[in-house]
Image (spheres, chains in turn yellow, cyan):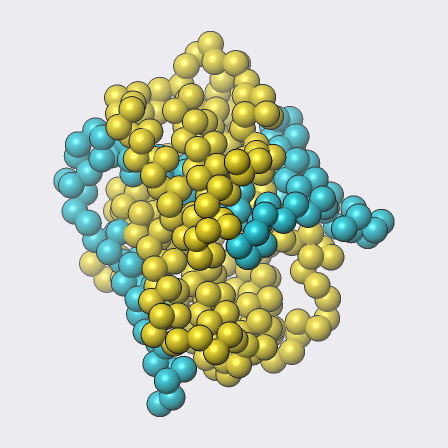
Amino acid sequence: MPAQTVNQAPARPARPVRDGVGLGLAVGVSGVAFGAAAVGSGLSVWQACALSLLAFTGASQFALAGVVAAGGSLLAGTAGAILLGSRNTLYGLRLGGVLRPRRARRLLVALGVIDETTAMTLAQPDPDASRTAFTATFCTLYLTWNLATLAGAIGAGHVGSPKAFGLDVVGPAAFLALIYPRLRAGRTERVVALAGASIALATTAVLPVGVPVILAAVAALIGALASPAVANQPAPDQPAPDSATTDPATRSPS
Amino acid sequence: MTATWVAVLATAAGCYGFKLAGLTVPQRLLASPRVRRFAELVPVALLAALSAVQSATSGQSIALDPARLAGLAAAFVALLLRAPFLVVIVVAAGAAAVLRAVGVS
């Protein structure tokens, strides 16, 4: 049983294909913004496409384009962009145990270990649904992100701003929705989520872009040290969370 | 090959290597309850942080975009009402789009 069956309400049915494809399409179109930004920073169309095809992790891609645009050190820029990808290692630790890919398949699965696929995979109630969700999200997002990158790089970014369609909210809303069952599952999860969000916001002004999110792993470390034994034990009498304590975006960074 | 191509390909290789490294760690290293619990909590912490950062910052500064925050709040209400996942993100994007269409931010 998934953990969101608090208050005797039925669990939301797992819809790994529909949800994965939907998320992949909605987030993938942001590739237009990357393609346009990359070419605007001085990368060629093919360099922009190579990053989306081979790196396939948005934060690192934007980071490298930003350094090229600023005329900064390519060595430092490359190191920074790679460092931003380190959170995918932490995701891989968890996904490895759920997806259990073998040998050659692992090499392919690795390319797809990013924020969106991790969130969608771990939101599923069982391993089969998790594998389906990973595949659906990865395939859809990979195709959409790469086509959108090409479109943005050759100038389609002038058609309209993704913001006008509210697409900048898709990522934050999707991450919130996908960790929501975990937030209902236990107090430790809620505290860890709130602490992670607070750490990231509080350090945004003083650390390079992208690093605050990685630093949020400290919250998980403290949570694990404080409560190692209560994994996935939903409390039957647990009250519904109220918005003041679970909506990370409304927190002030202090 | 230009220096920019070297940077592009090195970034791609490094990012891929980091992804593969996590998958390649032997699962028996995760046998300890504390390590397993850490691996379970990492996505919660990082995705919450990502949601917050993407909602409320721009570059290295806090940036409170009213339409974006309203979209996230709408998503939260939809979650409280047990809306399915796709409904949640459509509600979020729709709320932000409508607010911007009527001139908010």
